[in-house]
Image 1 (cartoon, rainbow, N blue to C red):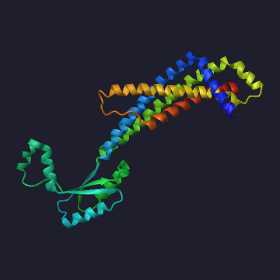
Image 2 (cartoon, rainbow, N blue to C red; image 1 turned 30 degrees about the horizontal axis):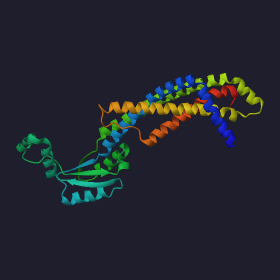
Image 3 (spheres, helix red, strand yellow; image 1 turned 135 degrees about the vertical axis):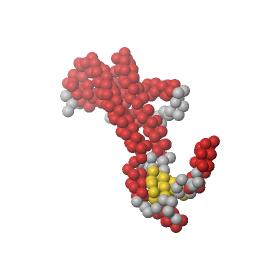
Length: 289
């Protein structure tokens, strides 16, 4: 068994060495195609991180009627805090709200001096748990608070959540389209490279079949060859993407590269794409079903 494995690996490496030019061209073209996919994936990763960080800061603001007395406010506080989706509740009096607003206005705070009464309401700043900071969960929670007696208005960034959902859907749609095109092109590139190798070794393959070699035994070196091409192309594309990332940081300092885990997933995926390309090329010659 070990001899077979060593033979298959050795034969795959020999095939790569015999066709250095063809293999190099295939790897370079594939790496450039994968670079395009990697750029889109990295842009998606960074954009989703940015949106997630913004979403993590979101709160639900429950504004109270001026008629709500201290007892009603305490009852509302207990009710809101008892909700399983809520992690914390902060009461902000109308005086505190006015003071904070004046601080934000700075030199323009004198505009409030003409007012005879404080126009701002008492409010609760509700912090939902992270897993409930989704569009649907926030809508349900806000609707529940809106129905409480003593509540005048509830705000929770509905416009942002709607835009966030649209942005995420659009990003995923672009990634799917680009990913499909790149993967198909990579499979086509490797399939054609392996097909040429198979043609050049057609007599050897026929001899192996005549002496009783099984299809898996014949196919294995070519599958490994395709996988190696996919792996090398993945490494090259990641190296080029790293250079692009470092250059981009001059304009976008907060841009992040893939984590080690995501980089490994990308590489493994490319290896599988390479193996798939080889398999597609070999089916025609060995009638594999």
